[in-house]
Length: 154
Image (tube, rainbow, N blue to C red; front, side, top):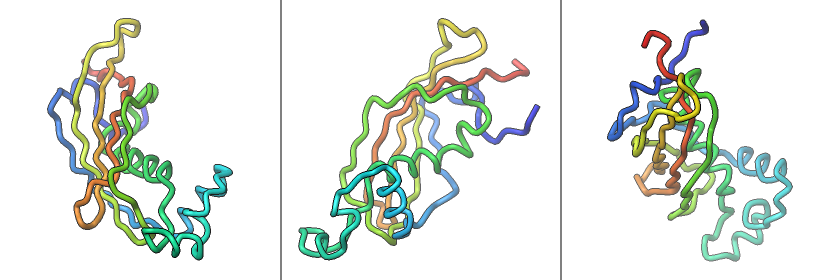
């Protein structure tokens, strides 16, 4: 079996809080590459002149990049090698903008956990991911459900 760093279903009781070790500073390349690869023509992400005339006075980081980053930063300590599938998101909010140069850190809370009715070797865990910038402002709140493997050792 390959080594894993994620947690097994049994290691994720409701109320578990994980402050993720890895942080990430968002670059202009992140924003432009993600926005253009997803074919999003929004000038608030790509046009510095346009964004300078907005209330923010600078380009906004694409919110879907922010969501992907927040979930990705949570993977090593939660689901790396121990998840079967991402089942979906029931809530995604972006209460404050992210700008190039912001450093994002993530805190995750397990809000629900139950054994799977259809898979005897798995359980469903709901994570609430909170992405915060370097000023501890909440920039992303996402509730995500994942199908997690049970520990092979029982």
